[in-house]
Image 1 (cartoon, rainbow, N blue to C red):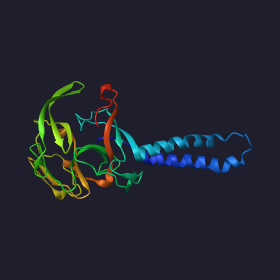
Image 2 (cartoon, helix red, strand yellow; image 1 turned 180 degrees about the horizontal axis):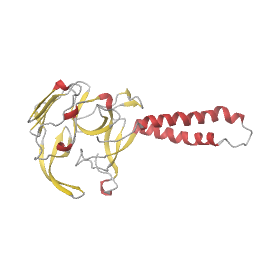
Image 3 (cartoon, rainbow, N blue to C red; image 1 turned 45 degrees about the vertical axis):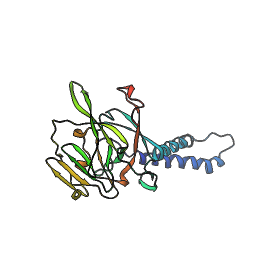
Image 4 (spheres, one colour; image 1 turned 30 degrees about the vertical axis):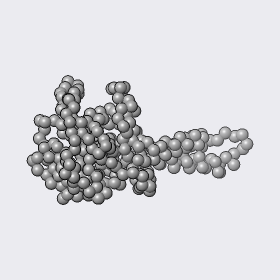
Length: 269
């Protein structure tokens, strides 16, 4: 799992209804019945004070920008555990909060973008991965070489990446990969075998073929194939399938904080 979360949209919506009801009760009923100059009851004052704040947060988080924290290493070296990121909520269309119904189309995900979405096998969880396959694409990942529609993704060696996890210190080969117009770094561990482990029984499973050398998939209409940049330490579309359009939350674009490394602020786009 890449994001651990409760349904904050639902919590905010309930708070919005509660504080809005208190504000409206005071504005259109209770205020007119109080004696001139009499202070409002505490519960009314509380509701009237918090309603505009809750409304602003609800609109900002639901339609514009939402913050997330990265709790795992599946997107190393692009995103590290502990990164706090911002996600653009309107890049891929405007959706009604809580029910996630798209009401306005804006853009569709492009190959190479980093996307946040609700995990298809458990929509209560949010995941983050890189978009690799678009609807209709044939994606092959054989012997750890990525091919899309018969064309191998350009990949060049970029040195090594040092992992430091307490007393556990090791290096991974790092490569620069290009997907569409996006260049990004990935990690590939040559000691890990190329076959996909722990494959789930997901929707459109028949679109994929698995061998000891890797996998091949045809991406169905209205779906996307995503992978982590830490290729050998990422549970992604290779194992649990495709991301349907209705599960998309937005595009990650900015690191706004990391308690362990302040130099990471402002990185990533």
